[in-house]
Amino acid sequence: MLKYSTYRSIYNETPEPAAAGRGAVSDHRNPSEKFSKAAGTRIHPFSSMQNLFKIVIVLLLIISGFTVVGQVFASSVSSPQQEKRVVVEPGDTLWSIAVKNKPSDMRTVVYIEAIKRYNDLNGANIEAGVVLSVPVYK
Image 1 (tube, rainbow, N blue to C red):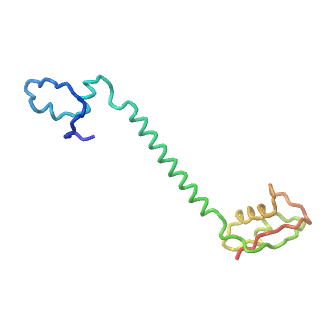
Image 2: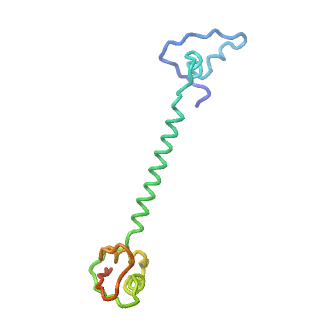
Image 3: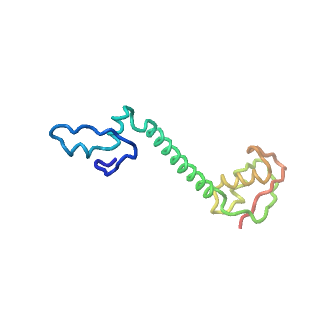
């Protein structure tokens, strides 16, 4: 807060008697300090609570912004143009199928999630003989 101010209150204040030797110096005190002494209460008892609330809101907005940006960049490279059918052989896993069929610039984990989405799979368990649809990205 400013040390010196030209602020004048719109409320009636009782003039304080000038202290001996101080004269006009007492007029340069903080007006809110005068008011708080006259009223006998603290200045803005909830101001620190309001500031804390504002800081928390700003932090939440920043965190949610990073989350949105992270979701945008974590999505797949592009949307699949078509799909390809793969028959699961004995010993195949979603990882091995993904490594064989994914684009070179895509992470294997992202491609496995796309396979799960295409085939409505909840886990990584697949059986030999099952036909899976795998996305083809161009």
